[in-house]
Structure formats: C-alpha cells, structure tokens
Image (tube, rainbow, N blue to C red; front, top):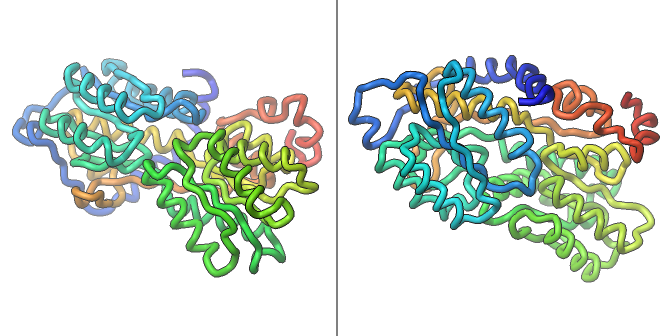
Length: 370
C-alpha cells in the first residue's frame, strides 16, 4: 500500500463508518454449504478478488490495494487475498471463478465483466458454499451481498451538470449521448439517471452504447456522429466515463471545432481531472473508491467467517433471480474545476503536483489550484 492509498483510506474512514451506522433492517445470509455448517472461521481466511478490467485506472490503482489492505487489517494480517483481473474477457473471468473454487476460497469479491454471463459461475460458487460479494456491478445469480455507488445518481449528476454547461441551449439543444457497455448493468443505470434529467429538454442527435467502454470505440462513435450531424450542430456530449471522454474530445479536436462543446465524465481519472482543469472536459463524477473497497472487504470477511451483515448493509436490492440482497450504496459527487481541491485532492486520490504537471501548470494557476 503506497502513501496515497493510506491517506485515501484514512480520509474516507469517517464516510464508511457513517454508511455502516445507517444500517436498516436485517440481512439474510445465504450459501448452500455455508448455511449447513454452524462452524465459524477465524482470521486465517482465503479471499478471492476478481476485477473486470485494467483499462480504467481505478481497478488496479485504487480498488485492489484498498481491498487488500482492509482485509489484512480486519484479519490481523492472517488472511490471504487471491487476485486475478479478467482484462474485459468474460470467458477468462469464468475460468478465474473456477480456479477460485478449486483453491477453496472462503469468500469471493466479484467485479463482473458481464453481469449476465457470470451467472453460472456464481451458481457454481454457491453450490460449493462460497459466498459472493458483487463489487461495483450487480452480477446475476445467487450473490450474497452487493456494494456499489448510487448509479442512477451518477447519471443524474452528469445530466444536471450538462444542462448547466449548455446554458441557453439547455432547452432544445442537440447532444450526442455516449453510454457505456451494454454488458455492464451500471451503464443502464447511468443512462436511466441521465435521461431522467435530460428528457424533454435536449434533442438526442446520436446515441451509442460503447462496446467494452473502450476510448477508441467512443472515438470512432464520435467521429461517426460528427459526420452525421455536422460539427456545428453538436451542443454537448454526454460521456458515461472519463476514458471515453478522452476519445470523444480527441475526435472533436480532430474535427476542427472552434470551441469544444461541454463533455461529461466519470471516475475522476487523472487525465479527466486535468482536462477539467484545462477546460476541455466540463465535469466528472467523483466516487470514493476507498469507501466502496472498504465495504466490500468488510462484507467478504464477515461472510467468510459465517457472520451476518446486519451492521454493514444499509439497504437491499434485487437482481433477476435473487431478492433482498444486502447492499451498501456509496454517495457520489459532481466534480468540476470548482471543487477539485475539496474532493480528489483532500481525499488523497491525486496530489496537486500530479494534477498540475508542467502542461497544466498555467491552467491550475488560473483556477487557483496550488
């Protein structure tokens, strides 16, 4: 764990405690074999951690070290974390789950590549008495717990910010809507939240579901939108995350637009924050990865020990086949140039020196980021 991650984990400890204290209702624990055994396990645990991809900086840079550190703290350093990244390949992830089952992990934290495709793997784990915590994305199948952000609120924050940036074009302006991958259930929720704000106010010139969330696919989609609509007919762009925003902005620049339209984002990636500083990107959504990762670790350790989640889970959700899944949804913040210092810098995600590299020093000075 590097210094930044230690700072970040400490900075959100109060937030996580507040989330935990807000618990309402009781959580039902599940697991075919787990329920049959009354024997409780100690700290000598084996926890599987499967993350979906490494294109987005958050998973390797933030989520993995935060989760590993918290599991170590909760078990006095006795637990082993077995890690694998699927690199956006659903078949690979299914094989990774099989390996985790073979290795007899005591619990599994799963960030699904494809929420539907992973269902059979979740069922296999269930059959072997391995509880599964769905991390960040609501996987299908008999999962035991879920933690993520309020994903509809992410979309609402993006849509609200875009309308603000559009100004007098917020009523009747034309936007391009660049949603995330259809295999990610969160993308559907982001879209739903955004449209709850944007519908009836703007015109959707073009709309895309971006394969695998890849920036290059968003770039190609944006090029197609510019060709179809004309560069002078695009008043704003809804981008579901920062990676895609980068590809979108590259296409807008290449088209020779005299002034870039406002573009949204999500994840508060360093490049996204720097684009906000320079004025190329209007906003991002800051999500406290430490808060989410800490909750996932707490859930996994509790379930591995045969404990209930009453003191952790604050709400419940349903997936296609499972009802009343113990859930914690972490709040989100709309990130603009006005609150960079009070969010990502204050929480230790990025330092001012990292954001304000030589290329962005003048822009940082202009907005008072020092």
